[in-house]
Length: 139
Image (cartoon, rainbow, N blue to C red; front, side, top):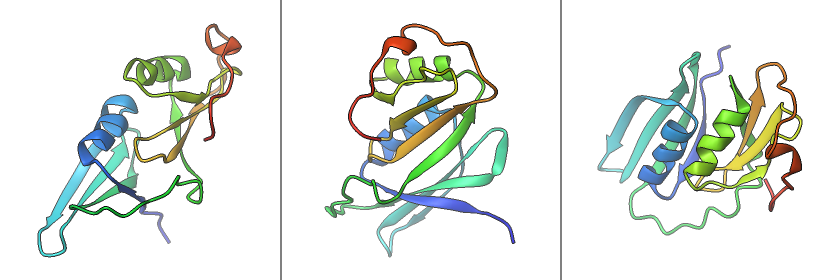
């Protein structure tokens, strides 16, 4: 058996690609446009693990309410520098819901409210402003 991918539905494909690619550093591996079914599939992978993908499913013109996405759980990514990753995402306008106070773990949400867990490779020493930041909302 081989793990292939996890799929999340997205409301705004461009906003989601900005988050996952510019913010997290994933790369688009392939894209399928299906006019007859009125949907687009975009597969993304981390540079260090191209075999495990995230599939973004965009249903054209859909008004379906995907809810808060808390029933999904989360996607987890190991990062080289959790502080730099969180700072980049924050500068892009994303809220760090669970700051990396411990130098190891943080949570942020995608534009479609998918919880994303960021895990530091190893541990970094606690660092401001992250150490003093409270949790914000839910993740």
